[in-house]
Amino acid sequence: MPLKTGTTAPDFALKTKTANGLEEIKLSANFGKKNTVLLFFPLAFTGVCTAELCDVSGGISAYESLNAAVYAISVDSPFAQEAWAHKEGITVPILSDLNKTVTKAYDVVFPNLAGVGDTSARAAYVIDKTGTIVYSEQTATPKDLPNFDAVKAALGKLK
Image: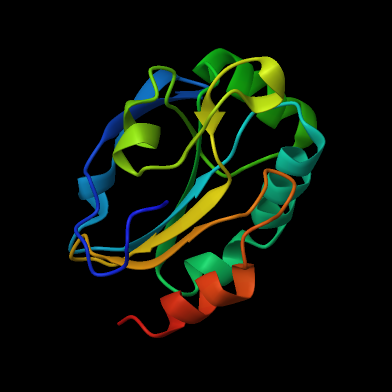
């Protein structure tokens, strides 16, 4: 079960691959400045994950207009994530949780996906500028997408 609304979001520092090399993204860097959307997803190079992140990338201006930074998180390596993002035109920063520490901290581990091992479940969090979780959702199956209308509605209620 994902962490509940009203709780403090666990801070983290995860790596993403950029043109300049590996860059560290820290959740708390947004505190006091921007709201944050975290999108956990199972694996790069899979159909539903590709559709989700391509759609979010294509509509990123809707999140930006709500003063939100969007980050996707998976247990893939940053190098696999970069290759996938480049191939598919994904522009949302994808953060590597290779050791599953953040996936576990947010309580969204999907055990033994397709018999290959534990991954992140598909989940969405909205975190306000104070670091409080104001929206939390884990989908019933990895094939189901989060309710992006509800994510945007939660962002719309924030200052």
